[in-house]
Length: 148
Image (cartoon, rainbow, N blue to C red):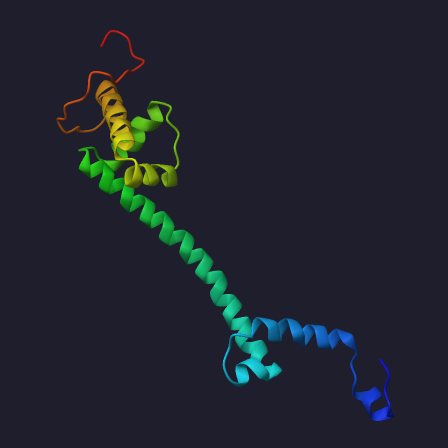
């Protein structure tokens, strides 16, 4: 940097300050008014926006988990099995699918989800778990227990 006067040399804090402020102003580019142009105000609002962004990411994860649970419970009710018996029957049948996958199947692949509920229902009846509603099971459900 070339300074024509001593006053400019004294007031300059070097390139570090320029880039530090530039980072804040880039993050504040979509704000309105002095929140966008004034550094001391912009830094407060940028910090606040970053805090809300962090909270928003956490809330998004919680919302998606709740949506998955709702879809799975609705699919289970549609096919006459409780959510707990469904999960327990799948676990005992060594079908290890996470909630997101089960929710996608319940929403977009109803025949596949029905097959899973039939397998879980058959396993629950086989192991005599809980109270099972009377459903007609297809003959092609295969279980690994012999003699029944």
